[in-house]
Image (tube, rainbow, N blue to C red):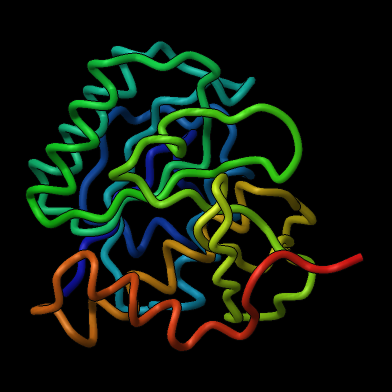
Length: 207
């Protein structure tokens, strides 16, 4: 059974039944984490979730806390990790732990806003940069292929009403988890190649 790390604000409600292990017990903003979990489970209902509850009510955290959370989900056996978050500052230690995750066979997926400055860890070479695409419905994915964004997914969680790059990122994580669940022997790069091959859209929406 595939294990998916969710580094967020703490999963609550019905999605708790899918949680295999938790880092910290507090739920600072369950609405956000629940929307992320629901998006992932929409694609891969069999996924076992590793709930790293580190974000506060403002959906922020210290860099050291984030690094420790990534190490924790890796130690717990995650092969896909969702990071619906972004830091403005490039931190070499964060880059290093993301690189170690990739080399260990784990795909990290982090949100990147469609507009504005780049954020980390999405901007790192060994992290999948993901956002939302208004064209995507349900489990559809877009292979963006831009300098800034690799993939995008459905931008809105209809149950909570939340929308944005965080939800798009979670949909991309869920799609990757489904591929990895069905074909566990594939390398990280092969998983991403397959995701792109079956994408519903290619490139940014032309307006």
